Image (cartoon, rainbow, N blue to C red; front, side):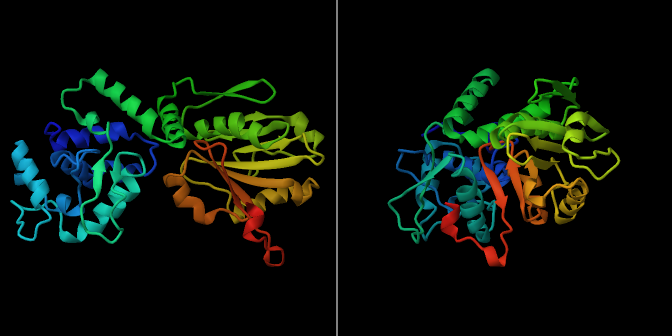
Length: 356
């Protein structure tokens, strides 16, 4: 069996293994997640061992049982827990009605999705038999003998081999925002110029919009306007604005960025809102911005709107219901993907196959 690992060690390491930016992080670092991993290790439900875990193993665990770290005691708990005659020792950690939460929220929608836990494929979905196990290699991250340096190396290796490119990108972006120096975030513009913005998540997303979004989705991108909290104007291209007839006034209800695609037959104006916490392109916001381009004589077909997020975590979930139809949503952590909020209208509805 793998060495006995106290639950406290697991609770301490989970937030390191699954740092800020990890998809469904809360479900992988919660107390129930720590309990589930403790019991998986406790009964030696490791890939290839032939031992498996079911929700009952978790909700029947108690402090008294968890303190019994001898291999024989651990094996007996794993083997007997699902027998009708089984009677748990001490006060159980969770009630019977947590079964679905352990199975669905923590294991299926959390630990399995990040590659920490696997499930037997030879059981029917209706079977009540234990089916879950720790993926090979994941159990080593909880070895109590690992020092700080060895633990970091082991976690880095596991993350690179098991987390998706999107998850790794999200983690990297969050770290960049958290560790940005007091000198701020330096942004490289399409014309070769650079600007420095104050450190923070909004600036990190703005940098991604200018350096990643613009060259991906615009033919010949140009930055017309960039602003930030506490400094309404960071960069403004007056010459380009005048050339295309757009009157930019700092005291108007302007977005965080205005990009222009000058590589198309008709110049495309792209209004972008950066959302670190709030402030997406809502219907009200969209109407206010269209007034600006209407006054400049732009055809609305040549104006579009993007709400830029760091990832698909809390800020997006909190604001997605207010996103305007006829706009886009983009995530810095998944730069090659774009959400389209189509408003074709009742008479121009597209069949699903036309989107494929």
